[in-house]
Length: 404
Image (cartoon, rainbow, N blue to C red; front, top):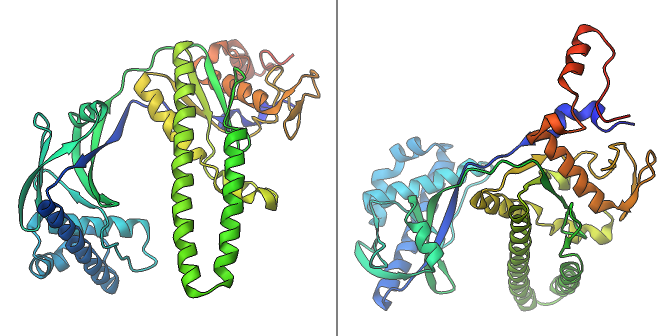
């Protein structure tokens, strides 16, 4: 059975990135009085957001302009906000209802609030900001690394003020001008998975043993804590939830670090060898696949979307071409003859040419071949030659080049 016969039109799509927005994170260093003013501003703004959201829910009015017309003046007077801070609170509520209009929205006491250039000014040469808080302007220093400082010079739009464990940060949206992707004739294929987080068409795999063992240990700890929380006193349940929340944050940070490390190595390998990168589009994969009960925890914690996002922006910054392909049949197709074979766990065997190899490696090589058909269709064995297409249109018997 030929792989490319029936799904050529569906399997290829390119995703060349020509621009992106990154977030520069800076740490504020306010005095105790300034920190108190910032804290009060966060609390007041979020109380205002909750009140605005309640009004919007009551009147079933969710557009920013309509909410503004209904509550703007009252919010300014009731909460003592400046005109622009009131506008930002209304925008925050409208954005929240864009995501979910099935229930009234509420906002955390110390949730983030957005500042624009009317109420926040950056002095990059002095490493200081002038920020509105509790009725007046406060000028305070900030601390960040050299990379963040460079990003701030491309800052555009709003910056978010956040409070994390007693420390204030500003998250500034920055626009990065990406280098034009270099012309390439070959791609590094990347197969994403649960056991092997990523396998490249060159053969290396990433994060299989260490991360899987870490995930299993965390899964057992969570299961034990959840069982204890369901059977003990109210105070025990409260403490259990607190511990589970801390474990969740630790696992998430560890997963993020792993994905950063893997994505960096993949992009560096592609750049050093003068190739692009071919990835599979796994959007909605959890809804389309089922796993054994013992594997559900690993399946749920599989952060493939984050890994793809990291590869995308690192590739764009490095000027590496990125191609995204449909994942259907890539794990079942022989990378040597492009016929469908059989996969059982980690083993792949082609029933046409007899090739036997690691299934993840074969999948990565197939992804590389499919991606190469996008950027160099004239050289790909997966694409019909032009004379044959013309012959097909004229009524002659077509044949796929390279299929034997």
